[in-house]
Length: 221
Image (cartoon, rainbow, N blue to C red; front, side, top):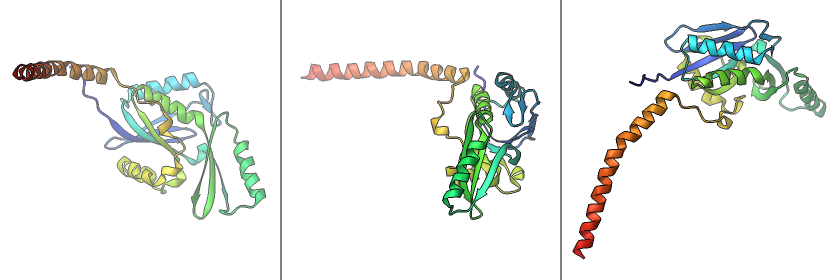
């Protein structure tokens, strides 16, 4: 018998100390980073950190999770500029982005409170969490800075939060459309094969009926 697949929706809050997973109807789950794996916002050992993520996901049964990441203030580099910038200010913005000390940086700007807010984040931590959940048939929908949301974002339900991200389509740090297709689980593959096999007798019957009908029409000519 094929086990029932339970797909889940969630929100993951990431900060410099670790991350919290929120799923409606459940208590949030917390995992803290250790200094030998993640330190000063940089990943020290990708392979070991990915293994920690893998273990955490399996232990807490977080497979088939479609989720967004919300990046906390202490994991971002942020700076505000006026909406209308002078040429020196434009250069300052470029210099600011280039000064963010990550090997792989995601940068983005958006308008909030009549200011141009520029942010930068470590792309590797986002992609590593994506890859870990993807192994268990999860799907990263997007990554967003905390400042897009209200102060009480952690008190909102996952359903409310996911509903609100439709307002922030242009502010997604992660382009899910460029991601590779979600892997199918062994259970889903078995189910598809079973469905295909169950259709074979029906297709044979349809084929026989069509052949018989064609023969009847030929004989009447």
